[in-house]
Amino acid sequence: MTTTNILLCGVGGQGTLLASNLIADCAMKAGFDVKKSEIHGMAQRGGSVVSHVRFGENIASPIIRKGEADIVLSFEELEAIRWAEYLKPDGIVITNSQKILPMSVSAGSEKYPENIPDILSQSSIQNICVDAVGKAMQLGNQKCLNVVLLGVLAHKLPMIDSNLWKESIKEKVPQKLQELNLKAFDAGWSMA
Image (cartoon, rainbow, N blue to C red; front, side):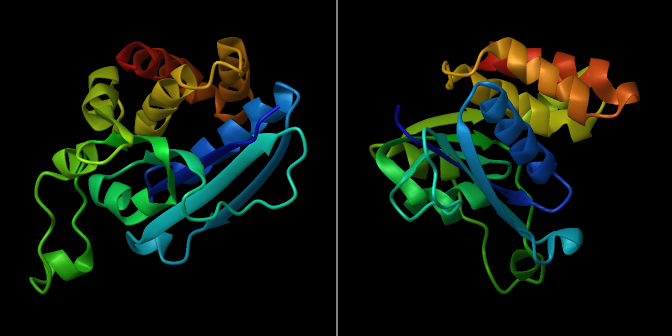
C-alpha cells in the first residue's frame, strides 16, 4: 500500500480546513492510517492557509516535504504557484481558477502573475484548472467551492469509494447545507 500525499492551499475563508478534514475522514473510513497538519496564521485576514493530509498503511509524520506531494489542491491560482514545488515530478495540481489579490498586489507593490495555468502546464505536472467558484455560484452559494474541488479531487483518488465522501459530507457539514454540498460534490466529480 503506497502513501498518498495531498497538500491543500488557499486563502482564509475558502473552506480549506473543512476540505482537509473531509479528506482525512474519508481516508480513515477507507481503512488508511491518516495524519493531517494545518497552518492558518493570518487566515481570518485573507492570508494563506495550508493543510497537509497523508494517508497509507503506516504514516509517521503529517508533514509533506518538497517534491513529495502527489496532489496539490489549490483554492486560488497564486497559491498553486507558491506550493507547486511540493509536487512530485509527475504530480497533479488541481486549481480553482479564482484570483484573490494579496495585500502586496492590492497596495501596488507587487504584480499578480499572468497566465498561471499556462505556467503550470509548462512543467511535467498534470494541471487541472476548474472554475469552482462559478460552479458553486450556479448551485446557489459560493462557499461550497471547497466541496466542488473535493469532487474533482475524489475522482483522482479511486482508492476511496465515492460513497464515503458523501457519508463524510453528511456527518461534517451542518444539516441545512448538506443537500447543497452533496450537489457541489457531484458537480466537481463531473468536472473531473
